[in-house]
Figure: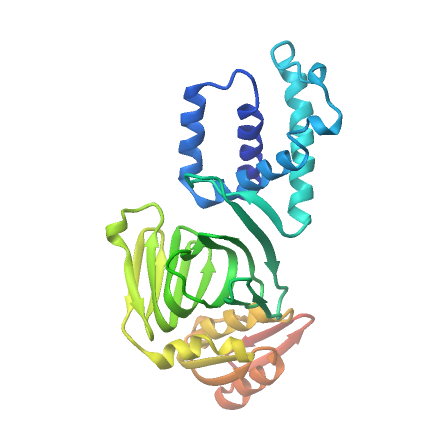
Length: 325
């Protein structure tokens, strides 16, 4: 079981326990603390709770009180409720946009949630109902949640560019791993690679903050800035409009570099293509690369490596092997 599956299972467990007649104040406190640990916990619970509500809290499926013998047979009841809740969660997961309760508000508000994803080498533009635009890069999965006073995006993996219509009454917040990125009137990109999150600002400014740290540690970055975060640590790279534009070249199907190691360039090419480039020795991987390349043209790029640097290029099925000659 992976981490996400464990979170989903835990969310179902909380949902079932919360709907039992012996739910206690201590359990409520534990549940609240679990929710506050991360946005992943909240999102998983929202999905589970929506499935529960869509079935009118299970009873509308035809189960009467006699089918809920929690006090008399906890084990049988747990299995039945868990199976039903899991089925409902699966329906919600594949059913597209849903309206779910947004936790954490004083008054319960509907939040419209939608899921988007791109396969290898693909890009997708999503126009949100508030007028904002999200452009997904290759191998990206994200979720959007919109309500009257809240706009949220969860970047689960990959990279996306945001052109946000600013609204002070409804903050636009991107959650990427441990980082929260809040729009302050801007165009920016966010890339998530495990616990590493990179934010590039093209226009305006954003706030970058460790979601588990104090608000005082939030950083404001503006056009031309890049923020690179790992967990609670964030490095702000000095202004370089050219570097930011290079980082966003993928929007035109390109990869732009200014003296980047070949190992870095190869890793980027591999994000966009089924054919994978493999560099077999460290010396070749340290060669510095500059220029603009079409992201989908593995063959053209590797031919340039052979012609310009004398590297040996061999094709092996869906791999291209690069080595010093």
